[in-house]
Length: 248
Image (cartoon, rainbow, N blue to C red; front, side, top):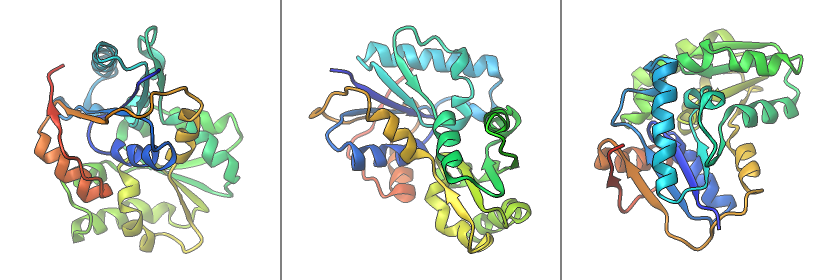
């Protein structure tokens, strides 16, 4: 049977993992947090593609056959990756699909710098005749990764970022970290605004794969295992018993 891998630079993908366990509870997951390297959003495209190809090679060596890249910044690089030995699904197509079903009257998006400046969402929604107003929300993921989910600084950043798009009918959360602070964002947008987390649409695609069930979940990081455990619990309430340190 096929083994599912799930990967992100940090713990944003833990929110995707949580949904996998909710919707596909028997599926075994190998999760990798790659915090031991430069944040993906700060890499050049060449650096990011090179790093992700190394990550893919690592997953293949661990028996993973199907990989979810639970990171929007990394997902922008998927067309340039070597996927000859593995099936890869990212966040972009699922996000465009989930939002288009909602038929937004006015669509906003918040995401990391790479996600926004890549133009991947503008092109994707443009093909469907949907205009989009984008805001770079770079500080938010770093704060969440550090375990900050409620500080005045976080709230002030949310207010600053969301203010120009607060009256949008829908706002796409184009970073897997952001659903962890959806309740914090809520006071800074209109009561009628829908905050869209596309992860459920992604899991619908994953459900079509024939995946290994009954196995053990494995958590790996190239960074600090203790920090990963703390951040995963603080952001998503996911308690991880063991995180192994790996070098890639």
